[in-house]
Image 1 (cartoon, rainbow, N blue to C red):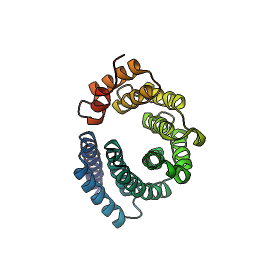
Image 2: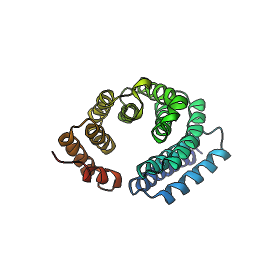
Image 3: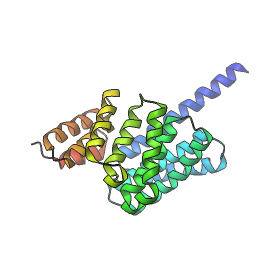
Image 4: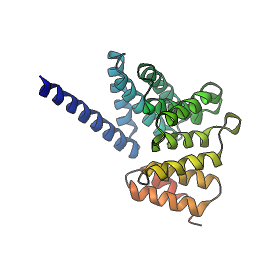
Length: 229
């Protein structure tokens, strides 16, 4: 019985890791049809298991990646729709397991995505974006993803909601300090540095991002549009 239980735990862990890897591949390739299917499948699984925090998180993660790609492709309405669907799942996950830094990070990231897709959403989701990623950092001060999500949130949030480029750069640099191989952090640092007018530094950061993750289409697009000087 004990061996069977151990096998089931390992199988579940492997399945979750496999799904996350496939999600990342679809996000990296900007494959919206694949992401839409993941989002639909994981949302259906979450609806069938309302007390399963991990199921809610997986649904939120899929919606977050779908929102991310839609926003990258300038389809803000689709981005906002996916983000708001993900928010509902992430809220359930945090309610079920409030001590998970990753669940709070995901909720904050989704709220931030909703704001980035529609500035007027800042009135509704701006506070959520800040509070939840701050909670994630408090729960796990060594989470590079928590600092990255907070940094991206600061980048998108208007200054009146506590956002700003300088604050965003500090958090993203902290994420890189915690995990130097985190390609997403180098990519976002490049995007924010370009916004700050630091093109040469931005170009170097984006080059690093592409080197770490050559499959990330959006990183390559950002590198191509960033002057080397």
